[in-house]
Amino acid sequence: MSTRNIPAETPGSAEIAGPSMNFATHLKRTVRLAVPMIVARAGLLIMVAVDTAMIGHYGTLDLAFYAAANALQVIMILVGVGLLQGTVVLVAQAHGAGAHQDCGGYWRVSLVHGAVLGVMMAGICFLGEIVLAVIGQTAELAAGGGGVLRMVSWGLPALTMWVATSFFLEGLSRPLPVMVLTILAVFANAGLNAIFIYGALGAPEMGAEGAAMATSIIRWVMFAVLTIYVLNLRDRADLGIGWAIRNFRQTARKLRSIGLPMGVARGLEAGAFSALTMLAGLLGTVPLAGYQIAFNMVALVFMSAIGVAGAGTIRVGNAVGRHNPADIRLAGWSALSLIFLIMAAFAVVFFGLGSDLVQIYTDDAAVILIATPLMFIAGLVLIFDGGQAVLMGALRGMADVWLPPLWQFFSWWGVTVSLAYVLAFHAGLGTPGLMWGFLAGAIVSCTGLVLRFTLVSRRAIRRL
Image (cartoon, rainbow, N blue to C red; front, side, top):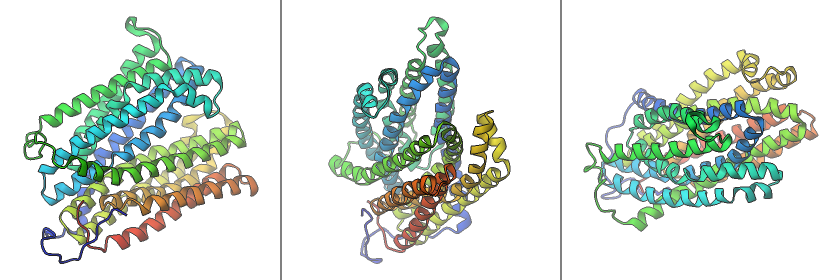
């Protein structure tokens, strides 16, 4: 476990804690951070949705190529984002401690890691056709998906370095530039899609590969613009952006000590949800379609949890930097309270308008009949799934990054996947069984992480 415990009154351990804030102040500051982070995360999901819609109107086969490629790309990106999350933790803790000059060094060390990680991911994408064939795709899908992945590969180093830079700004409690840039990127990506997918303005007609090319171009533009913004910050000297990097190896070890377990956790979680989708496929095409609609609705709303979790990480990290145990606890509980309020509101919408939401996705009566009952269970899932995500963020702010992922592994694989299989196939519940399994895993995860946060937040903790 990476959390460092010290006696409460160790001489020179900081660094005296400043005055604590009340709960209302914590909640207000968490909301201020979370809103732009939610919008930024939702923007990335919307970009994928726009790609999917535009490719779908171009041709069904190209949509299948894109889907096959995206399945591999999403897992790599989730793992990559997890591996770089040490950036936001280190920057938030340093910023809270008033050690602003350390922040720029953390960013540049993270950039190096992001560049290396992006090149490695690009290499995997160049072998995409082989990988897709190995995991069981048909020769046609493997070849088409492999072509899409080769186009994706050119933008992956830019994406991982952009993630490192956005985490740096978020660690400084400055998420607004990332939000604005993401919104602009959604529109720019749609414009380039129209050019490269359909062959507008004299460009070649490339279908799904054209969408991947557009995305890669946009990723380089996003990285370049955000980097220029950082290099022109008024307080860049105070943040140590132009200073020599001190203790490169030590900082790199800190980043990896936080990022490695988070990357593994992201991969395991994504794998578990992919397993549920495959189980739905074993039930048939219509059950798969119905389950996928309900799951997509959960995934869309889950962007709120990702944003609040990020805000929770920063607020807790700041309090750790100030060596203020009371603020550590209040920062975590305020983030958890916020996500429960948000998810409860969405759950009411799912309960009352489930059928209407399903019909946004399909006109097929058989699929609607399958998906509509799932929306009620999905509404319950939101509350606990959002809670566990925010608790993971709060624990991450304290650099408690080993035990929580192990608990997540048990929750998603030991409970969710196992119970979903039993309920769907042995108890004969079908797709509701899969969703009940999802709910059970979310409850177990949330309960265990509440206990973990309660325990760890009572200890004296110092920044890494």
